[in-house]
Length: 218
Ligand code: B16
Ligand code: MG
Image (cartoon, rainbow, N blue to C red; front, side):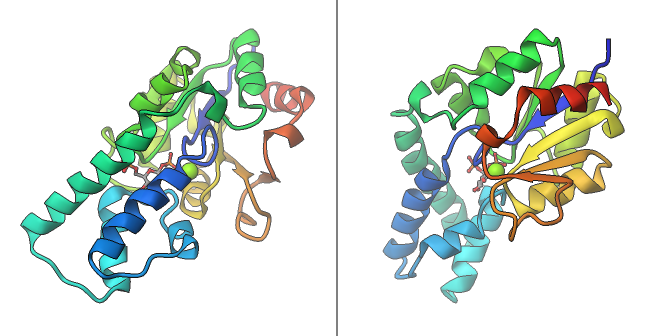
């Protein structure tokens, strides 16, 4: 039987945690006297926690000590986790369970490939842990997307060659990382943003089981 490695990004693909990142970053930025809009939040998608805070400080023309930087990162994460604690299965994005169940029926290896250090906590909250043969997250990598490290580790853990892996991604940097890893990139989101993906869909309702089957057998 054909085996392909199916790698899923988390935020923006499986759940919409961007809204909680937004609330936590906005609070932090405003406390520092920095304005923070939804448009700026868009630019933080797929970007690591450290890089996100660097960008916000940059936008606000602020420089702070290393100690303060570390303290602010912890504060943001505590605030973010208070939102995550309220999550449940109702927050899984539309048709994700259908695709995960189909891949399970077809015995296909599935991995998470996320920049988030909170990925395991989130998967547990929404009760999806059991669907994943491997989990690679922000704790496992030293280089952030668009570096392909996160996806290459996932392929290795699944025992599937990179060229036989497919990546579902909602961020520009994530699609780029999948392309660099020599994997098939499937953008979830807007065509105008993810034009560099091999395939693009608005959300999983547009992805049929037949399409997934064709990816497995091709
Ligand atoms: P954390 P993904 C990313 O998740 C988010 O898109 C990004 O906004 C966030 O800053 C990053 O995780 C780090 O998250 O603070 O939880 O470690 O899209 O790669 O699943
Ligand atoms: Mg994402």
